[in-house]
Image (cartoon, rainbow, N blue to C red; front, side):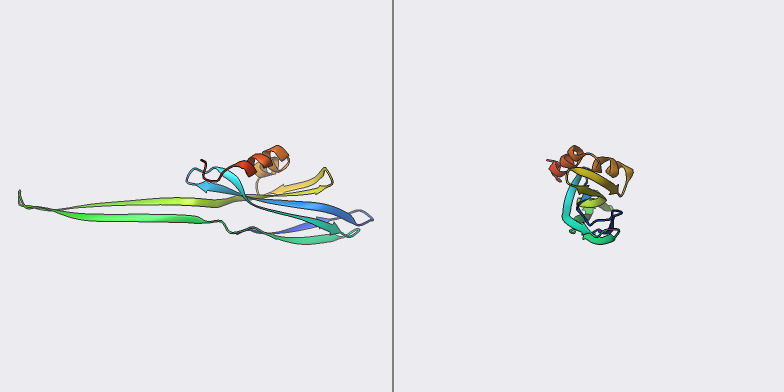
Length: 142
């Protein structure tokens, strides 16, 4: 789960209405394909010459790690040799891990501000088509 505090400022002399979109991006395991796992959208009314703090929280993201261990002892009564021991271990991780977040502030059709957890996600946040592409990714990669 990711929690963000977003502060929207209005430098104008009249109240302003704006819209916040926050996208939480995950990286699917084991292949690393990125997708938007949670989206939070809300309208905000900011007073003239004021600031409005907004608390935004993602939903939980699931990751499962499975570890398997096996051990076997083989006796060889024909040759009279001692026992042989074989062991194996494997680890599989599925689900997803958080990759980052994108926050977009708009007013009408105008993009006012984009902030993100990385420069790569900030670039994606400036492009509505790139965001749409991330929304359309299926987490399983199928």
